Every structure is written in C-alpha cells, then in structure tokens.
Image (cartoon, rainbow, N blue to C red; front, side, top):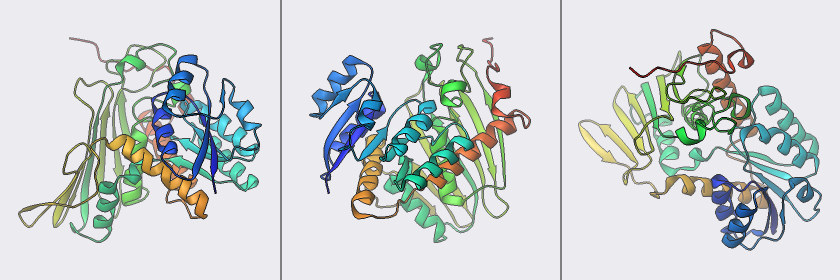
Length: 346
C-alpha cells in the first residue's frame, strides 16, 4: 500500500515532517501546499514533490491523495483538519489538537463521520527514554512517586516579539510557552501519571513586549491524590541553549531524563547511579518526530491502533486550558487576551 501525502505548510516543523515522510517506504508520493515561493523551492530541493500548490484546497480535491499532514500555526489545525476529513483524507496534525475543546470535539466527530484516521503528533511519547521511564514507573522501579519536576528552558523571543506573528499569540497560538512547548510537558505527565485532581498555574510575560502575545514564563502545578506533586517550569525568555529535564522522585529511588544528554535516562537507587540502556539520538527532536510520523504511517498501512489517540490530545488541551483558567482566577480564555504581566527592568 503506497500512500500519497499532502503536506500543508513549509516551515521548520514541516521540513522535519517531510524528511520523516520521505524516509518511510510506504509513502510513495508527497505533494506540498505552501504560500511562500522560497519555501516551496527549498522543499522541492529536499524531496521530489509530485505537486506544489499555494492553496491547500486544490490538494484536497485530488483523489489520489490519501493523507493530509498539517504543519501550520495552531489556529489553522481545526479548519484545515475539518476540511481534510470532510474531503475523505486521513489526517496527521501537529500539536495542539485545536485551540478549544469544542474545536477538538468537532475534529474527533468529523473523523468518526468520515471513517478516517486522525492523529496528533505528540512526538515526545516516541522518545525511547520517555517510554522506558514510563515502564519503570508503572513497574514500581523507584517505589511510589511523590514528586516530579519538568524544566524547559528555551528562547523564542525573536518570534514572540514580532507583533502579528502567530508564535505566542493568544488569538493564533492559544497562548505562549505553555500552549506551545508546554503541550509536550503536560502530555508526558498525563501519559506517566494520568489526569490530575487539581491544576494551578502562574504565568508572566516577563520580557516579550508585543501586546498580543501570551506567557513567556510559566509554572504549572499538577496535584494527584494518589500520585506525585508535579511541577512544570518553562520559559521562552532564556539566553541558555535549549534544554529539557524531567525528574521523578520515589520512595525507593529517583529517575532522571535529560533528552540532550548522551545518557538520557538515569535511575538513582540504593546509593547507585544506574544508566538505563535506551536507543538515543542526540538530535532528539527530529528523531522523535520521525518516529511519530512513521508510527502514524505504519498504523494506516497495517490497520493498527494508534498509541496516541485524539482523546489523549484533547485531554492535554483540557489541562492546559484549566491551567490558564486557574491563573486568571477561573475566567475563560477570552478574558485574559492582551493582559500584560511584564516585569520591568530594574
């Protein structure tokens, strides 16, 4: 079974998806929809594309296309996903599933009506260190987890400081760092520990000056009555190189995952530091994306169940929206658009 995939979007993430699609033997043709001519030409040099269009709707009309891969700003995941499903295509979408739970429910219902597969690329579930950490936790390797921390340090100031750019926009991205890379942190904790009983959050726009943008620095606390106290701390305003660290502390040991390290998964137990053997690629982000895209294609070809369901993606969105709502004293999303929590320089 050879698949013809329509890739919608021509940015950095789309190019990683293109490489992943091009290296799967069951993807026999790729077409592209992208507005920017330079991006079209660059991607055509990367892979021999069957068709290149500026309007994605022209590709939806092509009966030879089996799959639509959506690599667009967050606010376009819902309308483009709906259009693709209604055109009878399977859909692979970048995260998040949508900006609202209503939009997420509409996508899930549209896939069911069309009898088509719908998959959200929550790529961090496909890192072997994360999967092995989950297995160890569920087997009780460090006893009963009582605390977990996730720290994400990054810098998106250039794009977030551009007024009108979608990155970090309340209207187009659904928020700042929490709505963006925070999606991965929340999803990973849900995969490891399940749904929390309570979510609290504090966010700031500390450095970003564009008034239409959301949080550049955020802390989320996820509380479990029968699980760990989880803290997620993240920023898009740091000068440091990108880093992600996950640590879980249990009654008989601790577990550390550092994606960029040569030894990404380490367990501390009985006074010993134990390096756990897992498959690892130092370029972990494109590696995890590739594994997720290949999983999607494999499931289509072999009629397997997805390891990440649309309902999983919806639950991740729900927790993120709950966190933003908690930070604003229970107010809905529209009530905090444009709010400014910048910290002035001394």
